[in-house]
Length: 296
Image (tube, rainbow, N blue to C red; front, side, top):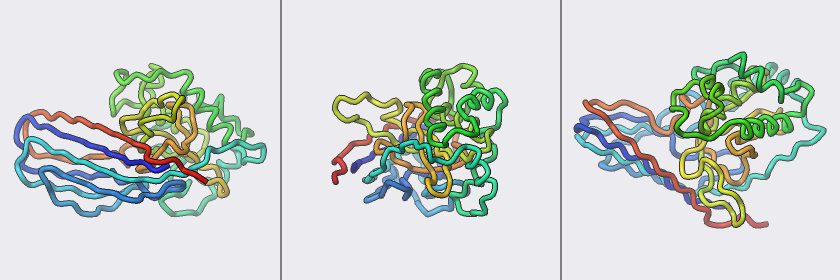
């Protein structure tokens, strides 16, 4: 599937801002099952853009500096991304969760995608006894890793309500867990917390879902916005496999990976500072248009 993606973020300031500096993580990364064919970043009223190092996680990071006085800032990111990613199929021969946890502890891989980087709690996803106990019901150490991953995702999708008014971007996982409500970020964080409590490497993914589903298929929750889901490391042979607890599905052809990190703080699409006074308003629009189906 070839997608045309348009992501527009517009800031409106109550008073003119004389200086702003932002980190942008908007360009999809090169990842298994996807290829970025074209990318363009447009800034209004303009600014200096330079490459920056990803301090944590897997992301394409650029630094934006705007030094003109302005009451608006518009950041438009467009991309063409080809996705050809099969749906995983659990098998009786899959490694067990006990094997995955052992291999992760033994790993000496020091790359950004090392499973060892994603075993431990992170600033926004602490370990929590109640979340751990609830998730553990799907995480028997003898269970195959793919079967357990989709089982936990389906349980979250089944027992939690999607409610954008229930949480904020900085709501801790435990609060969303207690409410049994939230958005994709909350569900991903709850699942990651439970997986890490079981000693399993789990990463936070920021990306997109296709806006228009195939004919006759239900519309996925989280389209028309940035989306979040989970990667679980499934051993050296299977590698990192994605699962979407908001929709109870695998990461496959409908998902476009933008960035991967320990939690949202590693890979927020836009963060930074402005020098000015007064309030600001931010509007975000996302469109993911399928251009052609993968054939062959």
